Length: 214
Image (tube, rainbow, N blue to C red; front, side, top):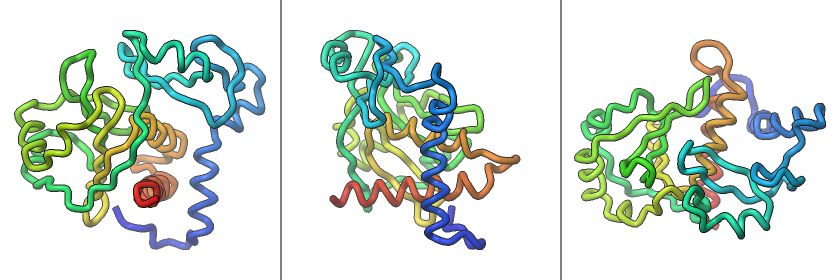
């Protein structure tokens, strides 16, 4: 994927990404029943809140501080990660990517404790689509990039953007992956997704690079 070469300016890109990120907030403002609440106790929560991963459904739960503190140790939940690591020298040969059989060039790879396997999630207009990876292929990738052995189960993901040239890679908290999936779903237009999706993906990875450098 490359930067859009149309008439959308950098300021326009920022505004569009902001609108995509706030789509759920705008919907909530128009309907009291959709105000942001803790998914566990239903108390009101601010927009800047914590997340837990529901292991059974592999879904992100928005939670208040008390629920985050009390439920983080539950068997069915896992706190999302906190680090962002930009991987400039990541080694991911084309033939190995092909062997993993991920159908698009944008995916998140992580260890799932509920399946005891490595899962790939990739965005679509319907949300996140899931695919179990061949463990031999994942083992080859870890051998080429030993830092993947430290990937925190259920909490962190390797995010891969092979739509960019050169491809981009980072280790990110799992909730950031679901954030991008939501942005893509909200902004998808037509068959290919349209400019909004391309801009959202480009801006997402720009922000990851800045976050990792800060």
